[in-house]
Structures are given as structure tokens and as C-alpha cells.
Length: 136
Length: 321
Image (tube, rainbow over all chains, first blue to last red; front, side, top):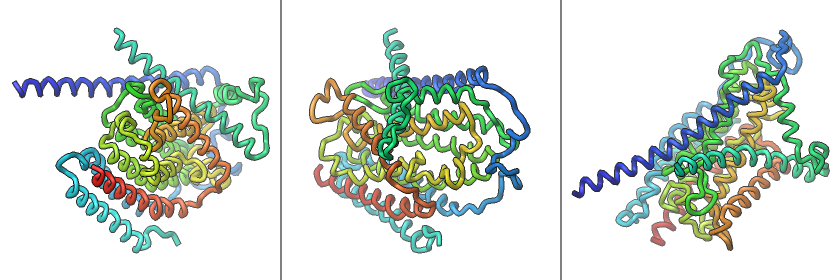
């Protein structure tokens, strides 16, 4: 008996879940239609008079030098590493945040959180100390 | 049948808000900036204080030739404005404006959904920056990427703090759990969230990726006409979303000193518009931050502050339990 009522609850939950995201999906469809209609209407309204000069890459009015996909020194890649590490960590905060103060958790969970924050802080301090966060 | 009608009405409402509020904020920006700088701003279009200026701009944009540079990655270049714009439309549906079911669609993991979808918007700028095959655009795109990396994290952490306080990640649930003393309790998180959001929208003083005096207009340099207009629209839709989210998460959404039951949505709107005014005000009053200053602010100020806010939230929550 108990399992069957839980099953009904599960089904209801799933229906609500799919209904919610179906509406979000519908809105996405409306958005795509809006953009498609705007682009199609724009095609009808605007002039099309391409010349080689117009299609040139813009470089302040002089002829472009070399190609646009130039090699660039990407100074940000260390930040990218830092970000990936931290972002993956912080994702775990959300499920934890919804239950940590529930009955039966309390103090021990809070200590766990400080250990977690401690890890993040040490990581940041390490990066700082290594000079990753300085440019010059 | 009435269920279907209900859904349709909600979708229409969200779509109308998505089209009207960004224009209203754009027009406000024209006028507010002008008056702060001792100018009048648009006065001609529409007659009364130039109210139709943005409509006129729209008509102009629709008539402009659509130029795709010969060297560009054509498909990606043309698709980028849509990718930049549509996430903000999707986020609007999850933002509650009043008590009960006054929300486009209550999404269970609302906070999570909203942050994830907002992150997608930045992809549009990256696509534009890369596909343009233009050196200025490439620089702008790289700066956008760096800014996203730096500011997404404090934003996530500040939002997590609110989720901890409310014990739920559902946006209506968060507003339901709100008490007035949350404002002083979460003020640091709120400031971090708002600042990081500004940076993610590339609004001044965080507009290094589109710095017009050095890299023309960053990732949008090569865009003309309608596609350029969609990028502009996405910026203002982004302001609506950021201000709405800050209102819902940190300022109590539809809660107010009085009339929260009938006129709750008016409180949400009022708070959102006041925040939008602050966004415009910051543009007029602050100089642009340099790229290294941007990174430094995020990693050495905002992230430690957000971590401290999480610790404070956790302690207060467990102690008062």
C-alpha cells in the first residue's frame, strides 16, 4: 500500500516537473520564432548592395593587415583553470544549502562547511601567493 | 482548456515584458544620462520628450544593410545575436513578480536554472568575437571570456548564500521565506551579486570588453542593422533580468511595508526599476576599470567577500535554528 502511494506521488512529481519544463521549452520556441521572423522580415525590408570594400574587415578605415584570427597571448588561461576548479566546487553548495539547517544536521554540517570553505580559501591564497592574480 | 489558456496568457505576458521593459529602461537611460550630464537627450521623436526615440531607432535598424564580412565565419556570425538574446527571455519566465502563482512558470530548481541559463548569454558575445575574424572583435571576445570566468564565481557563491538562508533553490520559495532582517544579513552577498552581474552584462564600469575608445565595440564591431539591434536589446534585457533577480533574491521581491497581497507585483517592479536606475547611474559616474583591475577586483575582493557571506549565513542559520 505504502509503495503504491509513494509511486503515485512520484508520478505527480514527474508530471509537474515535465509540465514546468515543457512551458519553458514553449517559451524557447516562441523566442526562436521571434528571432526567425525578425531576420526574415529584415531580409525583406533592407537593401542588399554588397561591394568588396563593404565586405572588408573593419580596421579603422585602412586595409586590414594579416588575418583576423591572429595569434594572441591568452593571459587568462590560468584564471580559466582557477575558475573551473572553483565552479565545480561551488556547484556542490546548492544541494547542500537546501538541507544543512534541517533537523538532524546542525552543528556537524556547519563544521563540514567551514572545512569546505577552508579548502576554497587555501586554494585562492595559494594562487595569490604564486602571483597568478598579479599581472605585473 | 482553461489550463492551456492559462499557459498561453503567461507566455504572452512574459514575452511582452521581455519586449517592453528593456525599451523602457533604454529610454530612461537616454534621458537620465542626458540630465546627469546637463543635456536634454532625445526631444524630437514622438513629440513628448522624445518618448519614441527607441521606436525610431528600431525602424532605422530594420532598414540598414546587413553586412557579413567576407572573412567571417558566416553561419556563426549570423547566429550569435540570437544566442546572446534568448537566454534572457528564458530567465524571465522563472522570476516571480507577486505572491502565489504570479510567476511565468515556477521552476523547482529556479535559482539553479536561472544562473545556468544566464551563463549561456555570454556565449553569444564569444561567438560574435570569434566569428567576426576581426582583431578588435577577437580581443573583445577574449576579454568577455575572462570577465565571465572571473565574475560567474562570486555570483554563484552569493546566490548560494541566499539559497542557504531560505533552505530552498526555488525562487518563489526564497521570496516566501524572506524577512526584512535578511536585507542587513545578506547585504554583502547582495552587493557582490549585483556587482558581478553588472560585470557579466559588460556594463560600465566593467565595459572593458566593448571599450569603444580602444577596441571600437569589441565583439560587436562588425555588426550592423538588425543583428546589432538584437545585441543592444540583449544588453537591456540583461539589465531587467539582473535587477529582477537581485530584487527577488536580496530585496524581498513582492514584500513591502504595505499592500503586499494585492499590489505585490508593484513592489517587485518598483525595486527592479530603482536598481535599473542605479545601473544607469553607475555608467555615468564611474570610469572604466582596466583589465587587470577587473580580474583583481573579482578574485581578491568579491570572491573572499562571497565566501565570508556564506560563512556568516551558515552560522546565523544554524545558531537561530
